[in-house]
Length: 274
Length: 316
Image (cartoon, rainbow over all chains, first blue to last red):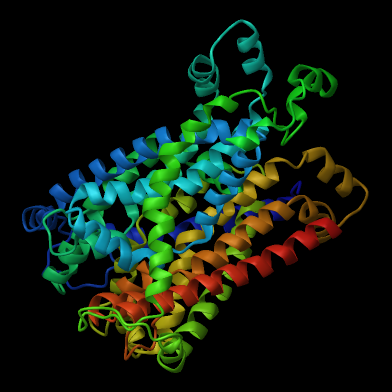
């Protein structure tokens, strides 16, 4: 891969050309959102009269603010619950060779294959009976349960392959109890994989549309994707306002991405390698 | 916990003999075994949210329950027969087409980008981040973005551009064939970057000396790729192809945003069909039967793919 001058030019053209292709739609998105509704020139031409009117329209004419808060609450609570429950469960699953542990691990893996759509109807009834339908708590419980298999799979695999057992053995010889070993030795060593779980699961929950569409529609408890769907329906062909709304909805996750870019990319690369 | 009594072997002896962390998959029974109850909350939640509703759901697919019936009645395989004779055929073929085509394109584009962005290039970290970024954005947002770009004549960005150059405008999303290809494009635009990231992670494990040595020995670029990189990238291929296929088979958001399955149900996929039957038509059992069929399709196809890829990995 050591380049001749020609090879180097070709690589630059290909790499930057691709990046421009990837950015072009984003440029259209931004350009359209900052131009007046009356400006009907092709979207590729930079607007001459930039305005923030569309953002004001989008913000005041919708529940996006509330939806961002709702999404943040749901994502934070679900991810916290998943990390705590999955970490606790993974420890005995990874460290015990008892048949029950192995069986339980495979039992969780089955959940990676089951499509949640089969469970849609019974869950709908279960949540309705418990008064959870249309509430954010219902979503949190749903995500906590449905994302467990993936989290347990990642953490258990990580414990088995990347955390040396010698630390735990040494601590036990020094007289530490099981719980002490778990809390003081194992938990700190799990930080990398917990980061991966937070990124992958958190991103998935933040962007999930199908579940809240079914369980939250018709309530005021919309998460961002549901609010956007209602928003697009309400604003019809006012694309500048819609695009301002899309940008508002993207901002939180883009900020997180820019701040934690390296960790996010590593999380996706590492986690998906599973 | 009767089964806990097996293999009382001494953990220290085992670890002394085998020296540590390189030894994968080794599990020592005594450490943390008495903490089995740590797994109880997870098991309970998992049973309540995943296992029990799935079993119930599978059972409902053998009934005729809908918004128009008070109680479900057992009808055997009736719902499956009806689904198979009904809309499923077109949607199933379309879903498999989408899954296979997007999987292929995403992997070719992602691998090419990874190979280039693995070389020394100014600003490559920024390029990686930019190309990967769409993967973290909601597919719904991206669907709406492209809905405008390929919007109807006199509205959509591409059409306005065609107008500018005096070319005839097209109703891209109003035509089932172009609409389907636009769905392909949108999925590939969004996820080629994440395929790239996984290939890049695979490439990081390839020592540069190896490639240089091959170059010195006179191996052409393609030979270097085929004989050196390809075998080393085998695990990355497996993951990317699996993720691409499974993701494609389940595609929902993009279709929902771009076409809602239209025009005239001609871009309906299995997942959007499940939603339509459940939410809009209230045909609960029918949508569940569809979901069961999707589950079987995903399981069978991904199992076959996994088996084939694994065998190839071993033969390399």
